[in-house]
Each structure stands twice: as C-alpha cells, then as structure tokens.
Image (cartoon, rainbow, N blue to C red; front, side):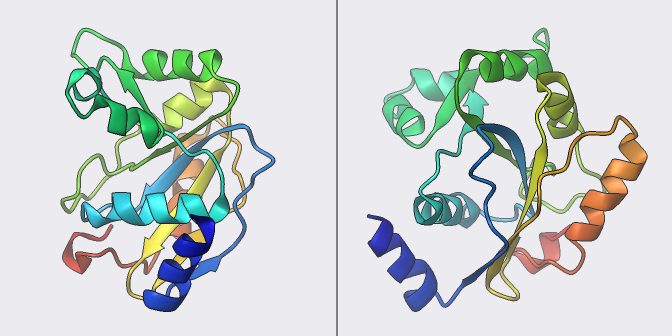
Length: 180
C-alpha cells in the first residue's frame, strides 16, 4: 500500500514533501492548515501512508456509533463528546493519556470555510497534554505538503501564534478563496 500511495502522490498527482515528519514523537498535535475541502482528508490519509506513521484525529461520538464507525476507527479516529457541557480540551487530553501513540491531526480553522482567526483548542490541547505542535501545510498552489519541526507550547499564546501563522503564509488551499 505504501508503494501505491507514493506512486499516486508523487507520480500521478505530482506533489512533493518539504520537511520530515518527526516520527520519533509518539505524541503530538498536528495543526493542518488550510482546511478548505473534504479532499484534505483523503490527501492526509495518502500522506500518512507514505510516512507509514500512525496519525489520529477526533470526531464527534455519534460518528463512531453510526454504521460507518468502523471506518472512522480504522482511519485513526477517536470519539469524543463535543457537547456544550463537556470540556473538549480535557476530553482530548484524556485520550492522549490513554494511548501509547497518539498524534492528533486537526485544523485550527475549525471549518472548511474562510476564517479570519483560528480556534485555539489545538493550542490548549497541546498545552494540557504536554505535547509539542507540528505544523503541516497543505499547499495546493505549490503542490506540496510542508512539515515543520516540533514546537513546544511556550505559554505565550500571542508569540506562539505569530510563529505558527508565519509558517503558513502564502499557502493556498484546494479552495484558494478559503485559504487562511
């Protein structure tokens, strides 16, 4: 499957990878920007296979209770209760505690539409779980996926976010108008 994924990604699609996935990290938050299309999920699955690494995501509990629950688990999903009465950051931190390997990929935008400001949950999840943040840019304009070195959360949110935002400058999503 890895050879097939490489053939599709590099040869058929003509994409490249810039940077190395930090496979030495057993736990981290992977902030993927921009998230402008459902194609991002499929691209992520393809790259995960190329890296040959376990990458996870969280989804609302009801998805995992549905007939497609097996698919979400098989692709690395973990269910969480995202109701208003539940503290999502704490719930996800508990998932980190319960797993030996858990690399959580998510989109700071929180939607596929255009946003002016990221949600902060990914930052507080990393801080609460005591794990670094790895930035991953899906740049459809350059046809490349760019991976950062791991960043430790410093607690200075403004400074940290400036660093993160600089990494993603100029990156174009599948739907360029929705890019961050």
